[in-house]
Image (tube, rainbow, N blue to C red; front, side, top):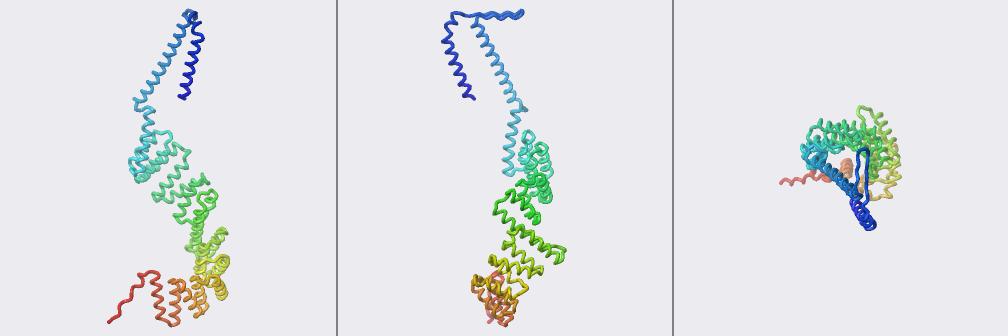
Length: 416
C-alpha cells in the first residue's frame, strides 16, 4: 500500500508539472475571476487566490486530523487503562504464564494466566493452562472453576475443555469421574478420535475388557489408531475378555463355561486363528474341565497352521480318544523332527497312555535338542517311577538350576 501511495503521488506531480507547462503561460496572462454570492454573503477574488485558499483550507484540515490522531495515540500511551496497554498486559502475562507453566512454576503460572484470561477476548488457552497449574498445586476446586469459566466464556469449545478436564481428573486419580466426562463427550461427539483414544486408554488402564471390545469398531472406523497398534489392541482386548469370562466370580462351572464359549463366539473370525487367543481359550477350557473341546479345537487349528506354543499346550489335554491324539501328534513329527516342544508333547501323551518306554525315549530326545526345565521334571518323575532314583534326583536339580541358579546351590564338600 505504501508503494502504491508513493506511485500515485509521483504521477500526480508529473501530471501537475505537465499541466503547468501546457496551461501555465495562458493562465498567467489571464488571472481569472471568482465570485461567490449567497444571500448576504459575497466573495470575489482572482482564480489563483481562490486556488491558494482551497490549498490552505485542505492543509489546515489535514493538520487538524493529524493532531487529533496524535492526541488519541498519545492518550493511549499515557492512559494505563487504554486498549493499547490492555493488549500489552495480556501479551506479557500470557508469555510469562506459559513460560512458568513449562518450567513448573505453578503458582506464578496460575497468577499470570488468570490475568491474561480475564483481559483476553479469546481466553481458552489461558484458562486451560491456569487450570493445569491449579491442578498441579492441588487446588482442584479452583481448577474446575477455571474450566467452568472457560466454558462460560467460550461455550463452543466444550469438547476441548472436557478433554482437558478428563486428563486432569485422571491425574488426580479420579478415574470414575474421568470416565463419566469422556462418556458424556462420546454421546455429544460419537466420532471424535481424541475422545475415542482417551476412552481406549482409560478402559485399558482399568482392565475393562468388555467396554474396550465394544469400542474397537469405532476405533477402526474412525482410524483413531494405526493398523499395527489397533491389531495389537484387539488381541489384548480379546485376550483379557476371554480371561475375564473364564474367571467369573460367584458362578458355577457350567455357567462360567457358557460365558466363556459365548465370548469366543462373539470374537471376529479372524481372531479365531490367532495362536495367542487360541492358547488362552484352550487353557481356560482345560481349567473348566472341557479338555475334550479344547483338544479338538487345537487339533483343527494345528492342522491349518503349526505353532510351537499350541503344540506344548496340546500335550496337557486329555481328549476323547488318546490314541487318536497321539497318532495326530506323531504325524506332526514327520515335518518337525527336531522340535523339542513337540517331543515333550508326545512324551506326555505316551504317559497318558502308560507307554513308559516310549515316553522315556521322547523325553530324552527332547533334551538332546533343548534342556528345558519342564522336560527335565517330566523325565525325573518318570525315572523315579521306574526306580532310577539317582538319575531322577540329578534331573530335578538340573531343572531347578535351569529355572534359577540360586535354587540349586553347589554341593557341600564330603565329610572327612
